[in-house]
Amino acid sequence: MAGYQRFVAYVYEYRKGKKDGSSGYVRVEAMDRKCRMEVHLRCVGLEPGSRCRVYGFVRREGLMDGILIGSCVTGQERIECMLETDAGDIGGMGKSLQDLGGMLLISDAGGFWGTEWDDQPIRPENFREWKEEKSESQKEAERNRKEREKNKETEEGEMEQSRSFSELSENEEAKIMKAEEVLEEDIGFSAGPIQQSMESQQESTGAAETGLPKPPEPPRRDQVNPGSDPHPPEPPRPGQPRPNPGPRPPEPSRPPRPLPGIPCDVPFNDGQFTDCRKIKPSDCAMLCKQNGCFCNNRFVIYGYQNFGHLLLCRNHRGQYILGVPGGYSQQERFMANMFGFPYFKECPDIYIPGGKGGYWYSFINV
Image 1: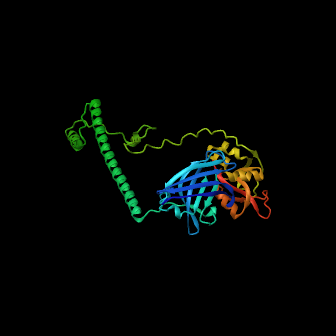
Image 2: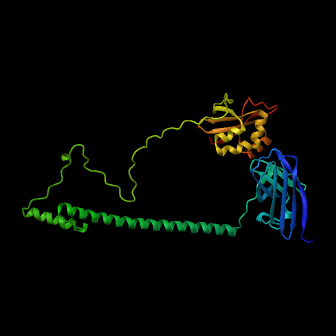
Image 3: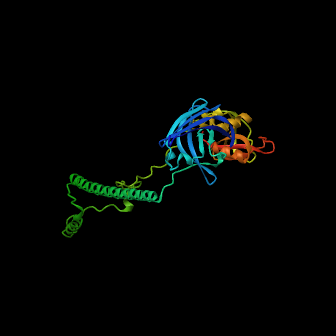
């Protein structure tokens, strides 16, 4: 049958960047530009409910550029799913099935599985996700769209400012009219509009010349009653910020939450970390729900199984760190970064024959 292709490829798990035992297989079937991929894996110790992304990869410049085909949710010690894509446009990235060198599966818990059918080895450290590269016309269209949105926001801001100024003018005029009405009711004198202020002054001058009694003069500064403010503050105008009422009273402090684990001596000599405790992987979820992912983190479990503890400390800024005991090497560094522990601190208490022992650590929320 023309255009029909079908094959099976065995999938292997990669631990610490090295190829381990077989975990299952993928069945690939392509016909009439439709490509169907079935995944059947058995993984000892795999926890259910973790997201697993499925990539087809293309080798470029010595690296493996992964094209995301789809994702699934892991089951109890198994990964099974069926995905479909265009055989001539895998994942919408313009590559055909013949361009692929194999497939990769990466779980959020840190698992890494792969299969290759181009007879070249898989190196996890060479993997990178392939992002879609936009053409020049697409980039130009994107820039034009952002420019239009920016101009629209500017025009809306100017219209809003004009509306606010108009409303402010109307409010000021209404206040002046209200003040004139109140003045007329209280003392029986019509203040008149603001434009008549000069006429009022002329009438007062004429009254003084004809011998009529003058209106009382305002009190001088030295005649103001003690304790009164000769210049009381004006009320804030519409649109102006209100004066700062002063600092708020301090909020009552919450009692500190008890931390899990067993207190221990600080294993470092530089004084950078304090308040150290030895904990277990299950204690991570007790610290904060956001740290629950460390309970099933394979790098965390591996360090705990080898050394019997994890380390919880706090630095001089009050930030908490989670430390996983282990040794320093390029291979270990790659695995630690992959599982979310980018920093290493040497410790004499962690003995590694012929190597450097310490803690791989990451900042966590407590």
